[in-house]
Image (tube, rainbow, N blue to C red; front, side, top):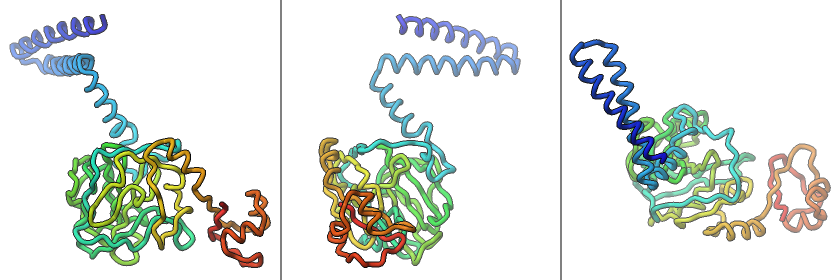
Length: 314
């Protein structure tokens, strides 16, 4: 019934379009041309609706595209998801098992995702020389190109699974916003812009505004492999406090939601020391004895605590 009504409307609008087209051509009246344009747009919209009803897969495809390139598609903000709340664990799926290396030489990670110099380092640093080409790891669409604080010149690419890869400290851009890019396509050239100590690529991986340890998703070796096609993310994998920038974290991949929920029970909890904290206060807050806390962290009861220092709780 619904389809029949749309077909009737489409038929009537098409007849009107033909009528006004002929009339406008005969009279050369600008107002007729305007009306013809409006009616033509309505006809195209109705035609698209008919196609969606006849092809449910096309409708699903458009809805998926709208969710990726819709409400949160912002070419002016590096993170348009600040008002978005993400529930854990969440899933990321890939349609390939390999990615393109972001640089054209051996990938040397000089600083990892995690706690560094008393603050969070939300990406990994890969060594390069200023002027080296930086490439897209996966097919996608360029969402942001611009200068962003400590990141310097930055390019953000959003991929079909909603994941975003962030390429920072660039010296030059080679793409523009809303441009579709292929895996391996040059995005820009490496440099030292922003807060960079020497030339390197600062690479971040984000999902709906949340940064993820890139080494949980990708193996940064010569094989350029994605660790699994279906990966579940827990808070441990996104919280820099649970990682140290000087060494690679041991992170088995969670392939199912059940794996992720079970893994949460085994993941360690880390506490960052704040002003006024003592071992006694921290121990009581987490229902531990001071002896247990000291043993877990290999410290003494009289050890001096520093603001920003990390303590393992379990």
